[in-house]
Image 1 (spheres, rainbow, N blue to C red):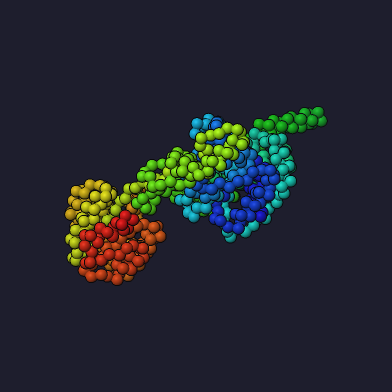
Image 2 (cartoon, rainbow, N blue to C red; image 1 turned 135 degrees about the vertical axis):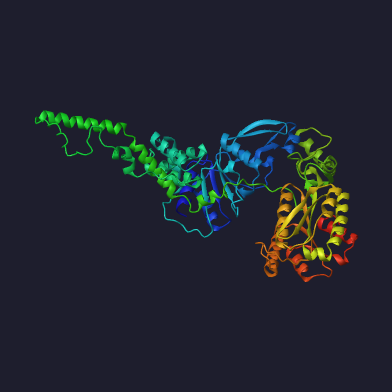
Length: 616
């Protein structure tokens, strides 16, 4: 592997702790595996390289109390976490785009301080954890990104695809990287190069000061890798290309032409103060005669040389030229389309972690109704089940007491070991919100809108008994309207439903889109949404608002397919006088349970909703 990817691997291997890490955005592909293998080959053999799973517990990551060893030793024994085990090495974090903000804060604190503070389970200690991080971002869209606070602490941002071709560029060996690591402390960088990198970061709209710090460190690492003890122009160009360009949020302002910068309009157009605009034929004054003596010529030459030296000392052109070169290097490396996407805000959206579960009953490790016990250690606030733990240890007491007496001559009443631990499992009922999507169009009003309202009232009453929240969406004309936000008030729900008018077109696709949006908002709040769609399945308004049954049916099926892919629990109640094939096809595309209103009484409707909710 060559090109910028190999350069980033070599530079990061030179100074993994000082550079923070690499944000590697790529799907699981061969190119990514080759890059990770290259990084591993460039690191020193004794450098720890460990993988971190996404759902690692705090005890495994930070450390905690080793309960089994503590019981055996009779004093608190600390368990070393993965961060402290990787001191001086590199961690590979999988699926960083799904990381929670709290986990990102833990990694960010370790990258900033190089320490792991352990204050839990009666322990108060700190362990050294100076390490680098490779965050694997597998996000499929711009909305799926790792937390910005963590990405800001990583020097490099590498975008890699499965079809990328290797670029031409230098290759390095592990010995060259090792020599660069030993030379890094001797590399110096002058103030002009630092100012040039900072000016380039400012011109590219980079607000974080960490970017300039990382650029300076990358320039020093590039110099060390090249075998130089001084940062040169090419090294600052590498830093600008690999560190500043991926962080750019704007293009630098265009510099004015040289002619305009030298001659202002006032100087170019203003006539001399004592000149006559009508008679301007007076010749200019003759220059003073030059001295003829050789001594005078030498004196003038010496003065000219002295003036030239003074001009060079005072002229700040050298730093300005260096800053321009650094800025050009960064601007040339800005990915195409990056700035356009920044303008519409696609890359500036903060990732919203999805919470909740698509089920009415959610498993919870800390609270809820006890539902038995399982084997495991009481970590992260989980409760030990004393009865099950003693029950598991009871059959081995005679053998363990005999072994204990032979080893240290002491006999304990009960010997409990790590493999005996059991923790209590809990199950907590989650909040369920039933979203009723009612067809109030002209065809429905003509046929069975009143009966549909009656069916919804029966379902509302049952939701009130279960203490579930309800919401009502009505669609008619060209739009879908939320006439009742999620509430537990049965009287308010009945009033909003009773005042629902009928008439107009059937924007079925709009209704499904609106119900998906509301259900997605409820799911992010940790609630369980259930969508109950009451319609005859005959839409006549397309997504663009134009009438037409063919396009409306196509749009409705597309929206129904999207709802099925999102995994929402749905129920379709056919409100037509006779069961319609269109409603059945819509329910099939939506993955919904189908129920025809002519054959659905209050009991069957209630059972259908309970079955969809998982409470049958």
